[in-house]
Image (cartoon, rainbow, N blue to C red; front, side, top):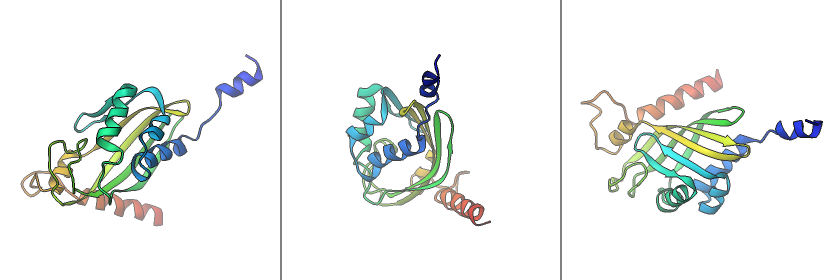
Length: 178
């Protein structure tokens, strides 16, 4: 291989910036087409706790159109806790907060709005193929979510509710200050 071929193979993309753009189009400036442009031709999205998401271009686009992009409560916020960027992967730890003022099909399928405020830790693993997202694995504690909206009693079960998010925020802020 000549020198220019080696440079092309080693080209590094700012995966964090691509990830941020993708999330911006999902939540801040809802745009399904722009979101899809950040992804490979046949991506998948997998929400581990409830097995929602999509597989392949049409499946992911359908999921974004019908369940996620522009479908979240108006007060939805994302607070980043940490980020790890590897050669072909970004892992974000974050807190997703919102008021459960509508059915959220991908997280709480079939559960009508409860009006409860939620703060829920998440881990998002984005795998890349060059500068495009190949897949997302998204993790959260479904028991905590159900406790926060009043469907599980955290006093009767070994689960926690909003305390999860508050504790991780407290600990991460101590780490930043100390």
